[in-house]
Length: 39
Image 1 (cartoon, rainbow, N blue to C red):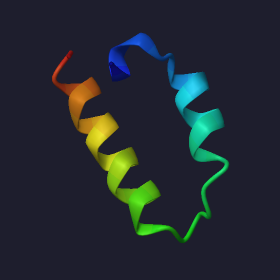
Image 2 (image 1 turned 120 degrees about the horizontal axis):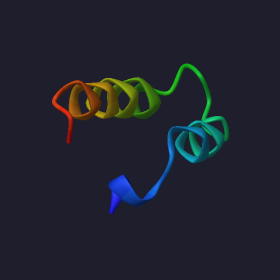
Image 3 (image 1 turned 30 degrees about the vertical axis):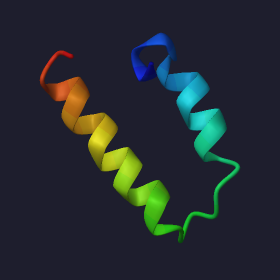
């Protein structure tokens, strides 16, 4: 599911969350981890 979105689309979506949101931090780390694995 997530792979269907581009990084720009994800950042646009995440920009709607508060920067202090733990969910945003967690998601960003998860996305970066997936990307580094070449998923």
